[in-house]
Image (cartoon, rainbow, N blue to C red; front, side):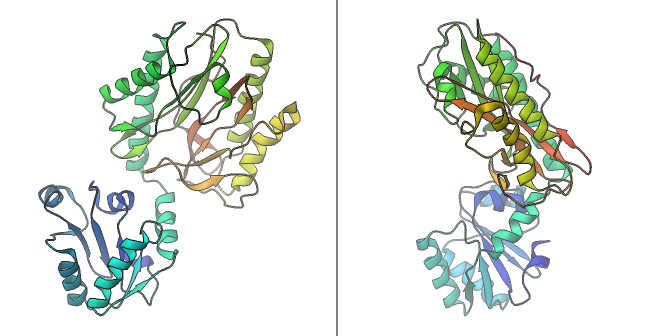
Length: 352
């Protein structure tokens, strides 16, 4: 598939990022070089991964390299490759110089632009049934772990311990790991969109914000829920209701052909008109898949149009500095005239 999308004046492409190697070969490794030509694909790995790669890697010929500069050079010469695109977003300057020297030795030239990344990003935008099933499994693990963990929350428990309990339960349920460092915040810290859980302890009247996700076979889930603990104020309830409606407004906008900026506007305008302009600073959402943040960005003024098969988050929030914050997030699949929500947990205000 990738070979068919390469520009006519290009003979091949070299891919080194972990996520893109996995996307094309279904093989996981911390190091490897995927060379895609018009006819064949070669996954070059060292002795640490060669046995596993021969058993597990798909859609490629596995090559165990002793000295990359020699083995890659030989393959390039054998295939008479002259112009090879590099995955520009993943190469460091040092790596780029190293690969260019190998290509020069083989009589080939490196094509350095962002075009290969654009091609791959477009391919990864549209999730297959297999990909969405993995993401759904990750979501279900996340929800079950959260449901179990909520039962353990009592006054005096720390954010850090709650986050540890969540991760333990996700892994016990079969998750590869967590999608990111789990965000569990309570009290005034909920006003920090990406705060870090620490020894801050839950107390009466707090909001507790969970921005969490698990990974399953490489694919991520992403969800945010905010709960009350004990006696919360009328203002807290008002902010929660505002965010909940803003999120629903944005969700109701999601469908084939709608611009990401319109989805963002549906949430943002409601929050601003409710009197909270300036208290919602981040984008309304982002793509999710093999990486937790993928294309597209559901942000103000974005003219990127959604299409069926894309997976995005919808996660507006209101953050009142040194007071409290609320965020509600779902991960959804774009469909022709609606959205399909991965999440099943209630978004009603729940008091623990």
